[in-house]
Amino acid sequence: MCRYTFGMATAAVFILCVSTNVRADDSTLNSSKAMDEARRLAELPPVPPPRGVVVDHSGRKEKGIASFYSERFNGKPMANGRRFNPRARSAASKSLPLGTIARVTNLENGRSTEVKVEDRGPYIHGRVVDLTPKAAEDIGITEQKGIAAVVVSPIAVPQPDGSIKPGAGAAEQVASSGGF
Image 1 (cartoon, rainbow, N blue to C red):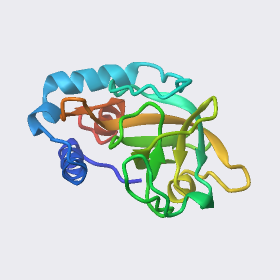
Image 2 (tube, rainbow, N blue to C red):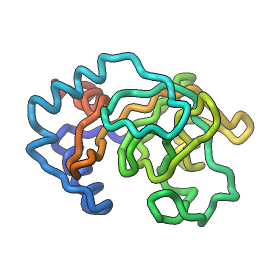
Image 3 (cartoon, rainbow, N blue to C red):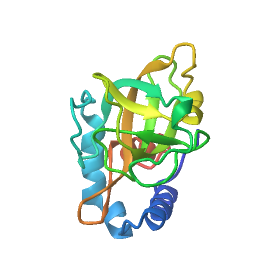
Image 4 (cartoon, rainbow, N blue to C red):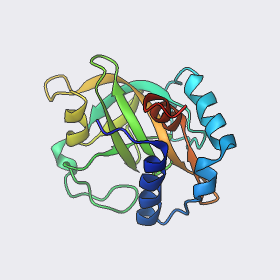
């Protein structure tokens, strides 16, 4: 798994913003107020997935079941307008804003990967995220089992005003790299 220092995470968020037309404000990402909020979110327990599509810009962790897209979605348009690529590290979420970068951690084996939320779903109760086959492979979800218990930790969360907010995953990332 790729680990960043916070400065590198900010650069990654900037690249994300340029590619998704979301304005990145480096001072917002690096502000002590924003990181204090990210640390507070990281300390909170994960919440279960919502029943319907309820977009949450808070950056709080979610806990539930991950599944992965079937082959029939290859090449079909996703919610953001791009075509589904099974080799990308993309995800569908009912609650995270499109363009969110998040860490998905398999609770059964501890493996994690970073994904970009590009689609809506899954629409099965208790499922928190659908992953591309590549992202599912990264965290050890096999075709035979098809699902795993996961925690989704948002790292960079696009806000309605166009800014980017560091989520719980950003604070965890900095803490694991020795940044706090």
